[in-house]
Image: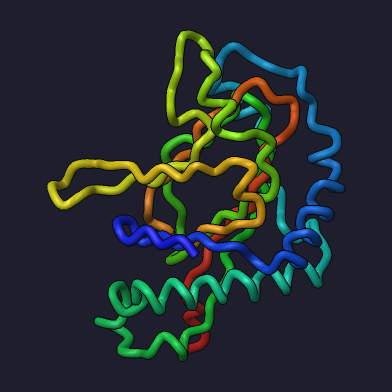
Length: 221
C-alpha cells in the first residue's frame, strides 16, 4: 500500500483474480475493440473531446463483476477512513454518527479509453470519495519520458497528477508514475481533490482506466 499523506491518497492493488476478470471483460467491449486509431487531429483539445471514449457505463460488464468490484472499492474506502478519518472531518459536526454506521452509495462508475495524445484536463469529482483503477497502461514511463513531441521533453508525460494547496497556500502536485507497472492498482481519494492525466505518445495501444464516485447514502439515516 502506498500512502500519500500530503494529499490524502491511498493506492493499493485490488484482488488479482477480480482484476483479471475485469480486464478480460473490459477488453471485450465493442467500445474498446472498435476504437479507431487513425482519427487524429492536430488539436489536442479536439482529440480529448472526440477520441477519448469516456463515460462507458461500468454496468456494461457482468452483474457479478459489478458487485464484486463495488465491494472491493468499499474495502479501499474503509482503509482510507482508518488512515485519514475523512467522514468525521467533513460530516460529523452535523451527523454525529460513527463511520461504521454509514452506507455508501455509488453515484456512478465509468470506463475511460484513451489513445496516444489524449489527456484528462484539470478537474475534480462529485461525491465524497473518488477512485481510479488502472486497467491497461500500454507504456513504460522510462520510454515516454525520452520522447520529444512538438519540442517538448516533459517529465510529466504519461503521468497521473493530484493538485492541492500546500501549507503556504500554493498549488503543488503529487505525481503518480502510472505506467504498465501499475496495472491492477487503484487509488482512493477525496472527490474534491483536483487531478489530471497527461498524454502519452508513440504507442498504438489504448490506456484504459475505471473511475467512479461514492457518497453517503442519506436514506440510511
